[in-house]
Image (cartoon, rainbow over all chains, first blue to last red; front, side, top):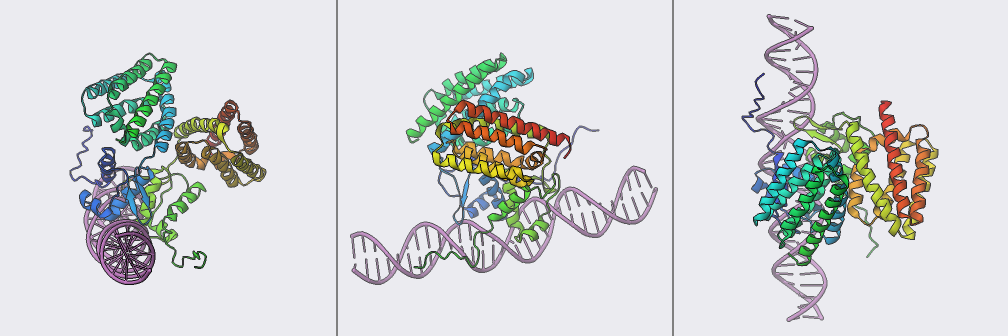
Length: 223
Length: 223
DNA sequence: GTCAAGCCGATTGTCTGACATTCTTGCAAT
DNA sequence: ATTGCAAGAATGTCAGACAATCGGCTTGAC
C-alpha cells in the first residue's frame, strides 16, 4: 500500500475550521473584553453564512470563550478577578496533579520533547514577543498534561487555560516575569526528569501561584 | 400596573430550552451509546428547524455529551472504561477539594439545604428508582460544589458528572450500592457539619473511589 | 436646560427551502 | 461470495426572509 496519499485536492469540510479561526482570534486578544461580536460582520470577515457562524459561536459559548445573552448577541466576556482567581486555583489543582503523575511515567522520548519546548520558551523569553511566550509556555504545559496519563485532566486544563489566555499575555509582559517564569518551568522540568514526584508537584504549585500573582499585579495596574 | 402577568402568549426565547431538553434526554439514557441522532427526526420531535437544532447540537458537542463526525452526523459517544476512569479521577480531585473548602465556609443555612438533599437521597435510596437516586445524589454534590467558594470548580465538576451520568444510573442499581452510597454521603455531611476539613476530604475521597469501583463492576457485568 | 416618553434603525432569533457532497445500502454482475 | 455501481438518505452549507427585541436618538414637556 502506498504511504497514505491523503492529498485532499478539493479541501472539504473547511467550515469546521471557522471555529478554530475565531478561537485563535480571541486568544490573540484581537477583541477587547466586553466588545460585541456582530454576526453579520463576522460572516463577511470569515466568508461564511450566518447559520454556520452561529454554530461556531455556540461552540465557543459552550467553551466559555464568548457569552451570548439573548437578544443581545455574542460578546467577549470581561473576566472578573474573582473568576480569574478561581480558574488559577483549579489550574493549580490540575497542573500539580499532572506534574506529579508525569514525573512517574513520562517516556524518555517525551521528556526530550519537553526539554525542547522549554528551550523554545527560553528563546521566546529573551525576546519581547509576549504572544510567542504565551504560546511556547502553553506548549510546555501541554506536553506535561498530555503525558500525565489522564486525558480528561488535559482536556479540562486546556479549556481553563484558554479562558485566561487574555491575561497571560499581559502578565507575561511584566518586567522580569518571563525570566522568573523560565526559572520556575526549568525547575518543573528538572523534577520531572529526575522522576521526583513530590518535587514536581511542589515546583508546579509554585509556578501557578507566581503566575497568579503576576496576573493580579497586571490586572491591578489596569493593563 | 397589573402585577407582571408574564403570560407569554407567544412563548419567546423558548428555543434555548431545546438544548436542555436534549441534555435531559441524554441524561435519562433515552439514547443508547453509539446510536446516531438523525437531525430531521430530532427536528420533528422537538418541533424546531434544522438550523436551530444544529446550534443546540454544537453546544452539546462542546460539552462532550455527543460527538459529531464530519459527514456522519451526531451520535452518543460510547464511553470507554479508560475515559470513565479518567473522569472519576478528576472528579475525585475536584470533589475532595470542594468538600474540604466547604467544611470551612458553608453557612448554616446552606448546611440545612445539604441536610435536606441528603434526606431526599435517603428516600430515593429506599426506592428502586435509580433515576431519582442519581438526581438526588447530584443535588447533594451540587450544593457542596456551589458552596466551596470556587465557581469554576463547580462548573467543571458539573460538566464531568454529566458525561458519566449514563453509568451512574447503572451502578446505582447494583445491589446495595445505594445504601452504601448513603452511608458515605452521610459521613461527608457530618464532616462538613463539624467543620472538619480533613475528615471531609477523606470521606469525599472514599466516596468517589467507591463510586468508581461500583461503576467498574457494573461495566464489567456488561450491564 | 434637563429629563422622560416614544419612535426608528440595527441586530438577533428563527424559519423555509434549496442544493451539493458524502455516506449507506441494496442490487446486479462476475 | 465478492465486487462494483447506483439510488436513496443524511449531512454541510447557503440565501433570503420576517418578527421580536434592544439601544439610541429625537422630540416634547416641565
